[in-house]
Image (cartoon, rainbow, N blue to C red; front, side, top):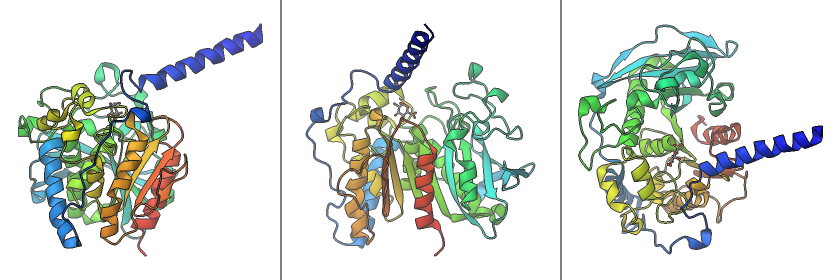
Length: 414
Ligand code: GCU
């Protein structure tokens, strides 16, 4: 009897797990490799023979992405950035890290940073920078981290509270990062623009107003916010962080954001996309899992108005996402997928990284040293890095382990 009960319980847990996994893979979309439409990718190196040619071509590609997908962001005069210094500096992780929380006063949005720097570091450190989904207080369970005001994802009545402290800590390997000698800065993306379709009235839009069809959607707004963090680091020599060695990192919609931040702001020294999928690293033309039409329908505020022209018409896009990756060249870029994350099309993410390889090679780097998709949990790291981890849509210690190795390779002073 006891055994039967145990079996029933195990089956119930398993079916719950499977249905959760399935809910991340909505029905009615293609998950069959043999049904991927025939497609031809535009050539990032069209008309390019030399690195000087690439400079021009890069500008052309960047402007296509600005006009047709992410939207143009407003210019910002960094000398006008207003900052409130952190009220306090705390020691965390048994004294291994210093934690501060300065606030950037951006037009229409006060953005609180959560900054960790190794306590014992001698000179300015290389640093990871990324947005978080739930508020800075979800990154580490520490009562001194300020609760975000305003709308938060998932909270009771969309408000933050103490019960949420540390709930995303498995996604932020803070201790590992510090132990390896890196800093970490994270910001709550909802402080820049709350992530729901409100007709562009809140966040930075409350200042800049309604975007035109070729002007910034929310992803470009979040990326723009990350560039303002760089402005702050450049203007503030006392942070202990080296602004020339910042790796911008993000997961899922925030991985789309880190890619756009890296493409639109060449000051980012390294770019990491974790499970970014459609509108991020995955090739749109494959229409595997999430499609352009679906993303524009479920999240009408993420991209610019013009991007909706391509709903169901991926083949008419003047670019594909391998060209977004190529905009990072020759800077190191890492694309990571998860095997269970078919909605994000792991194979399409790999092909995109691979599609940027010719640009990296033209610029004299080794590109992505893999002919075909590597086996699960076997990372490949050149100037482009790629892995497909086992498991679901998430950020794990395995992912961070690879990003740290990649950063050791590229951001350490030789
Ligand atoms: C949805 C969306 C994806 C996105 C993901 C996330 O699944 O369809 O495009 O990447 O949310 O950000 O968690």
